[in-house]
Structures are given as C-alpha cells and as structure tokens.
Length: 168
Image (tube, rainbow, N blue to C red):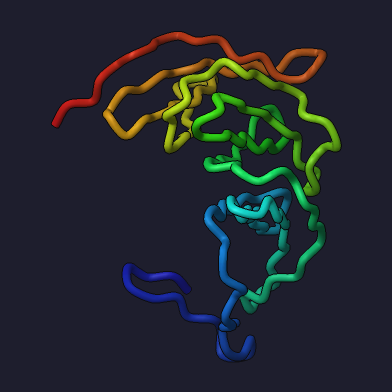
C-alpha cells in the first residue's frame, strides 16, 4: 500500500529491504519492463555501471555490471514503442549515446552524437500525445528539446527547439 508519506508492505511480505550501498553512485534511474522494476546506476568518476532487478521486498539483485569509460554525467531511461532505452551523456565532452535495455544494455549504442552542448546537466523524457521528446538542460537555464522516433535502424533524434532559456 502506498500513501502520501509511506510505503506499507502487506503483513505477510515482511520488512522492506534496507541496506547501505557502496559509495560513488552519481546517477540512478528506475525503469519498468513487464512486471519487473529495475534501476540502472552509474559511477561517474570511475565508469562502473550496473542494472539491478527488485523483488517484492525492495531487495535489488544485480543482473548486469560493466566498466564503461569515466565521465558519464547524465542518465535518463525511457520507454517507447514497447522497448526501454537509456540516454547517457558526458558533460564537458558533448558526447551522448542511447542504448536499448533488455534489461541489459545493448553492446553498441543505437544512437550516438559527439556535438551536443558541453554543459548539459540533466535530461528528461516526456511525451505529448504519441510523440516522445527529450529535454536537455544546462546550469545557465538553457534548454534543448529533441523529438525521438523509433526507426527500423534504431532511434532518430531531431532537434525541435534550441537555446530556450528557462526563466523564473
């Protein structure tokens, strides 16, 4: 049972899982595939990446881990067309990739670019009707919006607005 301020498991399910994690995880994003909940985590400074699957107690079980290059600073998972994807970005480099998750990442990125703005600090997937978008945001308030389309070869991202300033 989930209420505004707490999660209660049915009495027969026991206690909710609680354990300290290793240090250094700079990004964690949750996603669902079928009836299962997962999270993908990245340690920006060392490049460690893992995917964990959760059981009904909230206990994670690592199902995949790898060592990528260091510096991945933004992570956003999203679902589209019955598939799940991970957008990753390196701040200061302008490099971004999209991997298909199944729930483990595809070996090779299905989309990649090396010319994004170098100061992006966050990415947020959203939908409008049946269309999918990715909003990229920098610390100075500048935003870029990309439409995302599934193609026969993978994913296509097209810039639909750029250098939009968010003002209070």
